[in-house]
Image: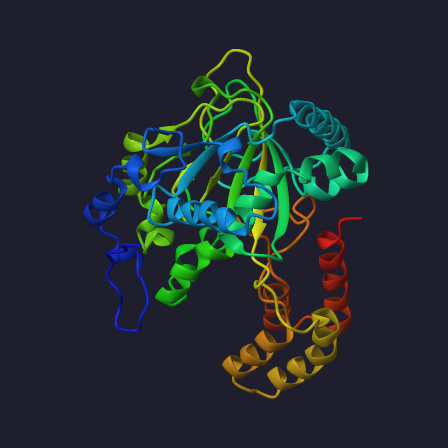
Length: 394
C-alpha cells in the first residue's frame, strides 16, 4: 500500500516528521466500485457488502479464496473499512447476547468501582471488558450460537489466517454520550509518542496485520446515534501512529470523517491503523449498543511458556545487591528486561484499568520502579501478588 513518509537515519519514524499534506493525499482517495466486484455499494467511500453474497458453498475453496482476497484488498489498498449487511441473519441470537450484556452491565454498576476507557472520558459510556469470557460463563448456549457466526470467522481468517484469537468488549453509548478522540488501535495505537518512536519503521507497518478490529451492531444505529467515525484510507499513512494526537490531524479528521448507519445484526470491520472513533450520540432516546471485536493473530505469542513472576522473584534480590554494589543501571535494566514481562497486555481491564493513561503498568515497570526505590524483595513480592490478582479473570 502507498505510504509516503520520512524515515529518520536510524530507520525510525518521528512525530516531528508527520506531514498533513502527505496524509491528506492518501486520505482523499476515492473508492472505485469496479475494483471490488463483490461489494454491493460504496457509501461515503466505504465498501458495503451483503453477507449472503460473501458466503460460499462449503468446500468451495476457490470461491472462498476470491472472497478473502477482496476483503484483504479492501482493508489494505482500499478504504480500510468494510460494512457487512446482515452479518447475523438470526437477530434473535443478537438479542439474546444483548440481554446477557445488559445483565453484565447491571451487575457491574451494582458492584461499583472505577471504570476506565480508551480514548474517551472514563464513565462516559457503559463498557464491558472481556465480554467474550463473561458471555461464555453467563450463557454458554448463546455464546456458541453467537460465535458460530460465519461472517466473523470469514473476515478474521481472511485477515489473520487460522489460529486467530477473538476478544470482545461491549460498548453502550447513551444519548448525550460524547465522541471518542480519533485514534488508531492496538498495538502501537495504545502507546505514547515517545514510546512509539522507539519502534523501527517496519514495526509500524507490521502492527496493523497483527489484529483485526470489528463491531457487531446490537441496536439500529442511525447517524444521530453516533456510529463509529472513520477516515477512509488513513491507514495507509505510515507515521499515523505518531500523527493521530497532533491537532492538525485531528482537525482534518473532524472535517473529513464519515459515519455509516448500521442496522441490528450488521457488522463493520476495519484495519486497526485506520483513524476512527465512536461518534457523539445526539439522539434523544437511542442506546447505541455494539459488541467490539478485536481479533488477534496466532503469531503474537512467544514459543515457550515462561513464568515471569517466578523468574523475577528469583533474580530481583541479585539486582538489588548489584545495584547496591554500584553496577551500571543500564546493565541492570537489560537483565530486568529479560526477566520480567515488559508489555502490559493481555490483562483484566476490569481490575487493571487504564485510568490516567491508555495502558496499565507492566510487570517490568513495577519492578523497575521498585528497584530504583530500593524496595526489599519481600515487599516486591506483595507488589507482584497484587499485579497477578489484577490480571486474573476470577
